Structures are given as C-alpha cells and as structure tokens.
Length: 344
Image (cartoon, rainbow, N blue to C red; front, side, top):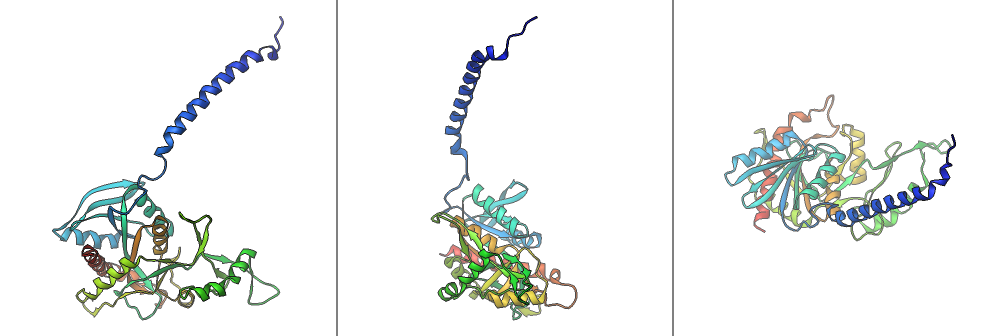
C-alpha cells in the first residue's frame, strides 16, 4: 500500500482554510462595526436626573429610609439590584432620588458609585455617614461637611536606611515627588504637610479624566461649592439637634476629611493625620466617592456625623454606642440639605 505525501494535498487544503478564514474575518468585522455602539456606560451625560442619596452601611440606611417612610411627600417606588447592590428609586418631594449604600471601604465605595453613574442618570450626590473625629474638639453627634477630602494611606512603606539612622531608603520616584513639595505647597494653601509616620511615607493618588492627556498626582478632591453652600444654609436654619437628650450637636461646614483602607483606632496615627492633612474627621469611603464624582463631572458633597474620637479612648472603641443616634442626626442634616437644594 502506498501513501500520498501530505504536501501533495496542501494546495487544496490551503484554499479551504483561506476561504474559512475570510468568512470568519468578515463575520468578526461585521459584529465589531455594529456592536461597538453597545459598549460603555449607558449614561454619558449627568446634567439632569437623580439626586443620589448615599450612605455606607446598614445603620445609616435605616435613618434614611425611616425619614422617607415618615414623610408623606417622599417614597421609594422601585428597587433594582446590580451585582448585589440594591439601588432604590423614588422621590423626595418633587426630586427624583436614587438611594443606595456603597458598602464600607474605598474599593466598595468606588465600585458602587461608578456603577450608579453607569446605570442611572445621576446629576448630584449627597452622601451621609458616620466618622471618627481627628480634631478632638468634635464630640459624638456633631456633624461636619468637609470641603476637601484626602487619602491618608496612599503611601510608600520603606525600609530604614542602615547608613542614616532615622531615615528610610526611598524609591527614586518618591524622592522626586518629595522634591516637588515646596513649590506645590507654596502654590496651594490646602496642600498637605507631608512627613513620614515611622516607615510610612505619604503619597498621592494618580488620576486621569477627560481633558487630561496623562495621569496626574492629586492631593485632594474638593466638594462642589454649590452643594457646600446649600449645606451651610441648611445647617444655619435647622432646629437644635439633641444627642441622646443630653447636648446640642455642633454643625459645621468646611475643613478637611481623610479616607483610608483602615479602621483608624490609633491615637498617634490620628494625631499624625491632623498634622499632615489638617484633618477634622476620618473614615473609609468619602475620598473615593469624591474621586469618582470628580472624574465623572458630577456634583457631590459628604456629610459626616461623629461617632467617636479615632483612637482616643482607653480600651475598646465604643463607636457602636452612638452609630444609630448619630446616623439619625446625620440623616436630619442630609434632608435639610435636600430641602435647601429644592429652593435653588
């Protein structure tokens, strides 16, 4: 028996393969040309639509939903779930609202906020939650609406320098970053007073958005002036907010807040954040919310009710004692801001 060499069949086989490839390529090109219109977020413009009423976790959501349920001119009419996150749709007086909880932490806050912008037309964000005080003048139940938000733990963890006690061996890029600090500090009064905390050397997040041709270091994110003004007017006209029937809450607009991926419960580190960032409060979501809103060009403001002095206690932190009570006061402030926005 004889066998034909495979190469003798190659010309006809090549023709078949080429024909199949041409059909496949044409199909791919056809799919690509018509399918690309479906890629990307549904909502590219956010100049009208919902006011997003946002919190971090369950006790804060209870305060929001309780206020809506008690108000005859407010309601939740629909709930949709995307990737496990519940987005409630309704109205507060005549304003369409989108109510959801981001979940605790930077990653959850960024993810769920960007999802909201991708799936819904959101024109502005009013975020409320509890926070730890950095400035010891604040007590549980006080409410602060910071103007600027910083990441406190975007940083370099460095080895000690064996040749220079007290100093660290820093990567070249960070040495260049630190060399830029005097000029940046001179140009911006809100720029941090960077210095290390032991082996932790503070850094900045790199962001990119439309109008930027490359990522840039960003020290902080500023809340929208229009919403800050609304918060200031709302607080000035609110009745006294009592905390457990014992004292009046202080309500304040302005200053700085810091966000990190940690539950800050160390007094020395808290003091460091005060020195470096001139911070009033600390928590785990707000700067991420501010970053996502900034990149999407959506107005935003953050309301924070104080639950404790971060790391200021002796023994176990007792922030859980006040979380529902201060969330209630924070919700009162949030809806006072909503009422103020309705008059503008």
